[in-house]
Image (cartoon, rainbow, N blue to C red; front, side, top):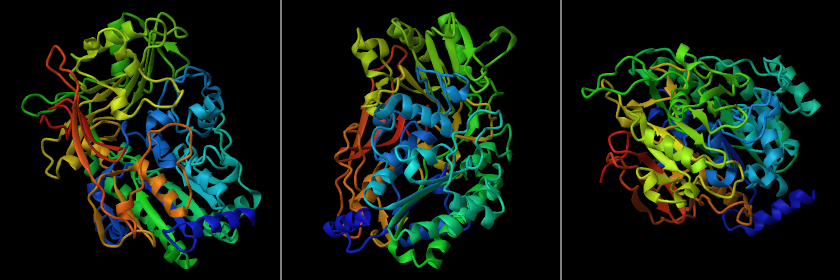
Amino acid sequence: MKRLALAAALFAASPAFAEPHNVVIFVADGLRSASVTPDIAPTMSRIRSEGVDFANSHALYPTLTTANASGIATGHYLGDTGDYANVLFTGFPIAALQGSDVPFLENDAVLQEMKAHFAQGYMGPAPLLCAAGLAGYATAVIGKTGPAAIQALDCLDKTIVIDDATGRPANADGSNSGALALDPAIASSILAATGQSSAPPTALPNVAQQAWLAKATEITVLPALVAKHQPFVLVFWSRDPDVTQHAQQDSLGATTPGVNGPTAKAGIANADATLASLLDALKKLGLDKTTDVFVTADHGFSTIAKSVPDAKANLPPPMYPTGFLATDVSRWLGQKIFDPDAGYQELDLSSGEHPARGSGVIGATADAPMAVVAANGGSDLIYTPGVEARAHARTIFDHLLNAPYVGALFVNDALMRQGNVKDFAGALPMSEIRVIGASTVPQPAIIVGFRSFVAKDCKLGPDLCAVEIADTSLQTGQGMHGSPSRADTHNFMAAIGPDFKTDFVDRAPVGNADIAPTLAHILGIDLSSQPAGILKGRVIEEALTDGTDVSITKSVVRSARARNGLMTILDSQTVGGALYIDAVGMPGRVVGVKDK
């Protein structure tokens, strides 16, 4: 009762509303703004039409899932959260991954180890869900393993958490899944309602899994939240359309239709149907008039290519296998390469071996690397640990300038400050994209954004026709993200509810780091006192019922020009201190970058 009284006091002190409101955040993983149409996604189209249409929306770069999950959770940019990408070099062995120090973060056990090791150095800013819990709200998070837990990483024991690892204490390989145990009453209710204690496996489209998660939410979680007689905050992270767009096979070997084909559209429709079922449940419980619903996507999407088009825009045969950057770095440094996803097995490049997931540890031995490449699809992170960090980074960088798959280059500020800054001409410092901040997670030396282009035979516009070189085991014609192109930064965003304007098109730039500050403002929660970093989003005041227009500044930042003429250009917008990356890269090599 003390917590509820605190919540009531907070509400009474807030000018935005007179009574407590609930909040639902729905994340449609990998949903491009332009792919939402009334015929494919009627529910999201209605929210965009009747509520707030965030027409100028942005993902954080690198445009990857856990990175944007950290921004959605906390309202901070990646330099503060330390979640720079889906795959990182940690500098310590992850027990859940048999000692690998290059983990894929979409794993509950890995996330818990990261938090235990780095403490406030990883995800230091408090997630909105945890702050809401302390302020007297009931909280829950449901959905995709990894980004779901990130929403409540500081308060997993105080939040209802249901993801596709729930009910599975071990992964298929026998490793610890890190799945959290549910309250026995909730677990029993879910089993009775669905006939299963855990979610079905993923599929294309991901109908069965999401239906199970949605039903668990409607039949068990929402009533449990209501029974607490407290306002609540609920996050639902939908795997679709991401999982379907990644694995669809409508055009293997070709870039059209790519992620615009019927299978990908079915994934979008599935996410939309999941959202519709949640809205129906709110209405049945009489909560639709008092609940704000914020819909976003963590990132956009592109079709994969494994080669760079020729001068006539024709796509040559595939030439970039999984781990192409790691194998190139190995050759450039003249060192061995070890696979962190295969027990650090040494790879024989002469016989065509390559890293299983693209990442590589490079050096004379695996335990004393000169370089580590963390493969992340549309962008890779390169680390150069050790006393010769700058020299090794410089050698790698010089070769990157001549690599045809490179679309954008960023170098750690600390390396740029050492010696001659012209050594890294052609790259921007990482602070320009807000990857340098308060986190103590090891920072990459170089971030490589891969090249992107518009498919030759696609007539749907650049955002839908974008194709990117991707460091992945997936094939040409399937889907990927992570790049610095506008196709990957332009996510879908819309909101509806008692605290948002109606029939309003917001043309100011907004982004995933703005969600937590905005909803905290609505809920009467003060996040400004967080000590873990200053790289923060903003309150989207112009979209609120009592909001006014904001001042927008557009800017272009250019790197120094490299010896071969290449430069990285950042096209962005700002509102106050909030940064929105439209696209960043080398002109002619990244969709959306203009040589102004």
